[in-house]
Image 1: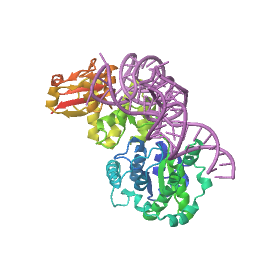
Image 2: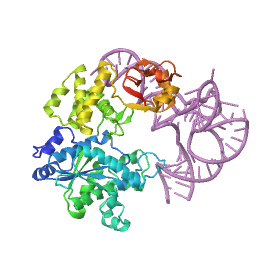
Image 3: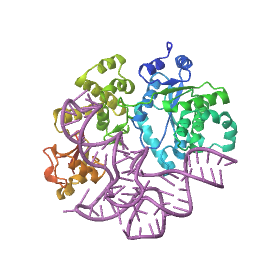
Length: 417
RNA sequence: GGAGGGAUGCCUGAGCGGUUAAAAGGGGCGGACUGUAAAUCCGCUGGCUAUGCCUACGUUGGUUCAAAUCCAACUCCCUCCA
């Protein structure tokens, strides 16, 4: 890699975001010469994005900070078609209303990280449904289809690997590449976009876009990809004890989000600090040098910074304090995730397993029973040994709550109301 | 259009008439050890109004006292041939 001139590219490499680029020198020059408009596409299959998309979100944020213009492309059109990848069961069709709803939820995530508006470096959010669903088949084929070589498409990993594994691929899926390529060209025309960023799995789609732009309009487009992120022990990151690590507060509390980062594996701390926080590199270098239990301090910094970005500095501090009380002092923190239960119901008594299930510490009553049987369930920090135990108002502790724990890390409070 | 192969639990993948809620591995959860880490070891891993009951082996019917296992039709997938 020759010497880079643009701050953005330099940062991109230094922090570990870089995987591949269609033409790094030309892109670097373009970024150095002036503001660049770049986009990243996101599916809208859920009401929130999760940490799996966090790297891309951070990149858009960095892009904006560096004086460029980020565009968030919502895959409203592709979501409407339904992602055919995965199971063969036909999934329920997502209605326009749900897609809109999901987009609204996802926008809330982005508002935490980037600034939207009409200014030159303000971000905008667009929906590919706006142009994709208006396409006319024959004109589209004649104008764009002719530029795609089937021979070539078969060599792209997304297709090749699928065929090698003897998995069927429908014509619909086969077209994804083409639609995404078309998106890029369309965004170039509408908003002057010249750069598409995405995960390494998007490389083929991105390259198709740059080539389609060149062939149809002689556009000079760039593609840039990020590495696939896995934890040091090789598993996909993005799961917490209670499911996906959502970025929206109403889907995952800041405390649980903080916990997710606090539980990072030792070997990942430095990498995550670089990718998901904005701490200076020398500070990160110092933190990741900590050894043994001291590394826990670095994990706390990681958790604090990540939570501050996704939620707020106050939320991060509150989460840190809750964790400190719960794990380090062994005290009861009243800020643990809490569920209110009508007092009358508690007076009558609720089976422990039912309560675990109700507050989300288990996915089913059976699972809760197994938890109790296996000795992993605790009531006010005392192990529950009776599977049929019924909790009542008598179990409320001195702070007026009931503390339930599933394992050592998951805690939940019941507040009589 | 023809010939052959296949569809099993979250995933991979055994089973091929009863002892099968279904081997094994992965993943997940819990326990031990630790540092709220990793690795390792142990247990659990369909659901429920729970010493019982209900759903499950592509779909629908059939044979049988008894089917994931046998038969028929259908659906989808794969491979080869045209």
